Length: 377
Image (cartoon, rainbow, N blue to C red):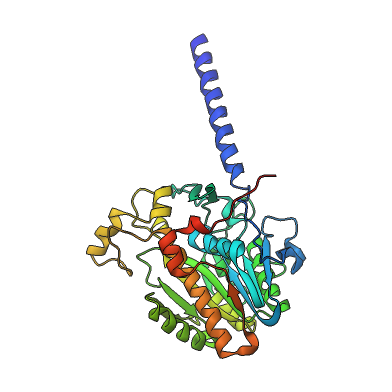
């Protein structure tokens, strides 16, 4: 009897120790990675300045504003809509830390779903963080979730009904920011975040909005731009320009019957050119092998090489994989080309972006070359 009590006490102590250590790691996911304000950043606002309904919540997030010397167009770039798509976050960080605007204004939200980056998707064995080597050491970034943290929004309904259209989706899509637009001021936390972004677009008279994403290699809409019909001409010309630069990229029309997405609802409910870009990310795919930091950074997976040989993928996939450097370079090239085309087609909406790494810069030198040193206070 005495032995049973001692064994029980030891097991209880071990359980408490494991719970404490795990709790510390989960809590650390709420600590934002530092983003260095580049010389071109004029101010940093909070999304709650456009909609106070999210102030003081984990849905509130930073809006980096880069103002030009001359009046021109206004562009918004969204990263982190889905926080398990790291090329989107890193592209926005590179822009924030490097870009200088000569004309027009650039608005950047690196963590559009700020709650989504504070946790991992359950049962996916995803790494909590990944590191990028720079000349000043390593920069660490969180690898989050596709959805809002259930600690911030729970429970999920059995069926999610998109408010403005009545479309029915799986219940867990209620926490997907890219199914929540145009949002509601009295809706769920995710809908409120979407509503805040819509208010930003309206108040700042955003001419073009680009939502950066990644997709699994077996997903049909990949290495592509998805455009609302109002932005199709702009996107078509950008695709031609990217192809001339050697970037193979598709163009997809925004479906009318798939609701809640940026490329549909922002084009319907605001005057912005609504666009979305996808790259190939094996670390979020269903056919992936071991899920770790190396897969996030290097994008190499032998199981996807096998899937390619079986004809199961929608992008080429060989032993070189699709590394983060390649994916970020695609997003950077897409953003710059879209801005260039809009500026040429509509001079009153011109935005001149300088001092950012090009596609070839990133592929030759790597992301780390362009990440700034974090100075500790």
